[in-house]
Amino acid sequence: MKPQFIEQKAVVDMPGQARPVTDERDGLLVFLGQMRLVLKVSAYGLTDDQAREAAASPSTLTVGGLIKHSAAVERSWAAMIQGRRLDQDHVATFRLGPDETLASVIADYDEAAADTDALVAGTADLDQPVPVPKGVPWFPQDLDAWSVRWVLLHLIQETARHAGHADIVREAIDGATAFPLMAAVEEWAETPWMKPWQPAS
Image (tube, rainbow, N blue to C red):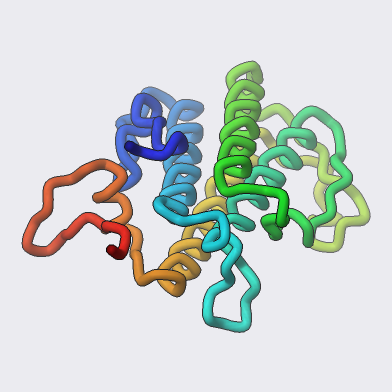
């Protein structure tokens, strides 16, 4: 049986390719949705303990932590669209706590994603200004506002970056790589060059 987080085919079709889009807003949300799904695919078949494992590198990133962090990122940017600021412990967003499960952070990510999508759907104009918070070193100090369009493009960029991080961490855990995981999730037929991932027996 497929994990709960894979039940997004009606929105994204498959993690390997985004579905055709109808307009700019739909395109931005579809590609953001695809990157969310690709990030979650990196967790396919992992246990809670494995989701807490860091890669064999100086990095402390984990698959579970990257998913948890991505939910926090979406909530932070959604709040900025609404003219609010969230007070978050940035470091803690990257850690899957001992009382947290992979299923719980995936469910939370899905909730954050649904909230973002609803917010964007209810935004009449993608040019709506999103004020740049002042006093944040990594934000431009000479710019008054981004647009909702820019925020969506930024979320696509950041989610794709973290999906790549998660791919590397996952491969270090059990050797699973993106396309065999996608093949397992989507139940692709095995070919001479593509064998769907299976858990070690």
